[in-house]
Image (cartoon, rainbow, N blue to C red; front, side, top):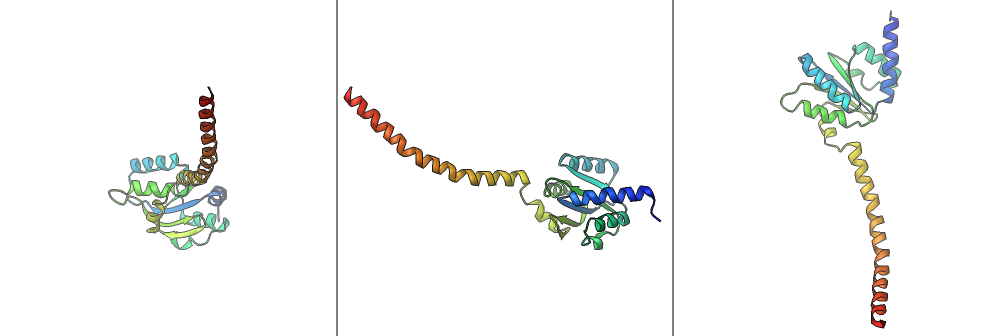
Length: 171
């Protein structure tokens, strides 16, 4: 029978899983406390949460949030990384943490409503961040405007040059 504390945890993580842009499920076996603390801080800097939950509670929270695709991946010792703003940022942190040896082993990723295997997270890490994509988009929008402004302004500059030359000749 579930306790009140477990009900609160399930309700809390149901809301968090609904809000999340991405949820990463990783095996944290063999990681020492110092490494876990360092990894948690890196995730926190990118507005992502690193949490260890019992699989049974996580499954109930996922199912209550309407996410059933991850049920097969909820085995073993899992940490759940919940990305709230940028769904790519946690994948980049995984790449950074796992540079030398694989510290965190990814089981699955729920990325913008689609489930991917752990190997696909390496491809997700290659995607530009949200801020970089927005910058590229703004650049693409601004470029035609700048060209239009330069095209419109060029004949006026020529006309001013001609008028100044005529003025100089009359003086």
